[in-house]
Image (cartoon, rainbow, N blue to C red; front, side, top):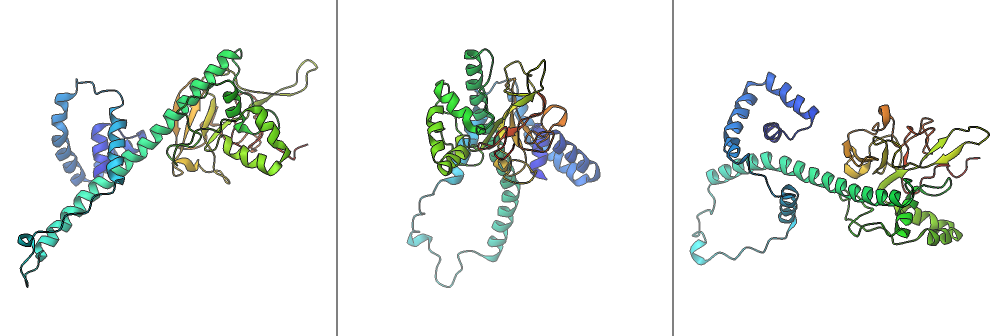
Length: 325
């Protein structure tokens, strides 16, 4: 609980965790005493409250911490003769071992969960930054196409937006199709839409490539616009003015079932909204009015039934799935 008390003091818990800590404090006097001790410990930080930290300081600090957590330490030097215990005398007394063990348990118990949480938050933030890079590319494409974002054809894989942006030379050098929170960042394949079409001659090769185009991310499959004035129903894609709160890109859904994305240990998914906001959502009902962002209103991985029926498909998903009549 100590790490949550520190987060409570520093006001860096989410709303649910904040309420849990307050409920715990109400029923545990010893926790309130511990909180007061921690409050006194962090009180000196108030003296620096008016000093603005350099931009990106916390990201750099966590990256530095991760570097030290993962580095290989050099071998310890051999002890000198003076440091070697005389024969018959133990180097550690039993009391020494007990004191050291107690100190280690206390320090590890306090620091490891907190460090683990900070490292998890850092990876979520890195994924958000990656999605912002994609948003910049999508908006640059919309500027060149009368407000339209890359559209996935009825029988095309959702990941085709990557070759479309490649053809327009809009993908930044530091964008990754793998989620930084899950695995090592990988730049997108520099493949054109024409190259992708040529791969269709080999269906197995094409499907493998289709799964890797957008890899860890899911893109909008568009939606069906109702028939009107003699015009049949048609598939359309999102536009810049479709609505700032419509999801357009997110961590990919699980391979099966209805759980959260596997990119962040199943705890939730980062969702990029058309207006440019990226929010970490703890469940997949992150669309308009609680819409499931990975299934349409018919509970299918297919294009939405109207503009507000968001469906973000993993790289190989189609707006009009293969096998449908």
